[in-house]
Length: 88
Image (cartoon, rainbow, N blue to C red; front, side):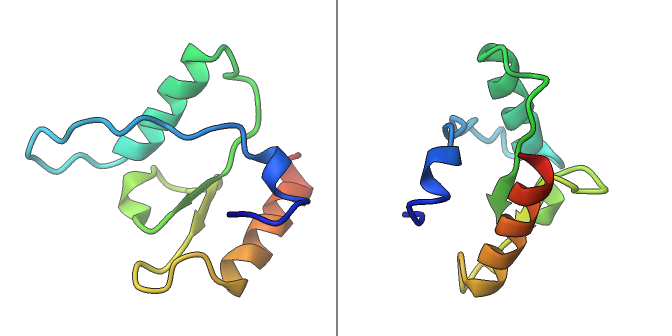
């Protein structure tokens, strides 16, 4: 789903944690941090693509926020490339 220069930098996806029926702020960020810990990669840089900012704790420095009804567009690509240049 990503261009040839970005695809090799994608290391995985987090499992989806079942919802327990209540508001769970920062849940996705927690899933990412759990995945990194389980993979023994806690010290590595990471970037998330998501459309739910509330699923990440401020200041959300690891998040590329995509619009729900648009998805990954040129603006998200530009932000992702900028973050990859800074983090990786």
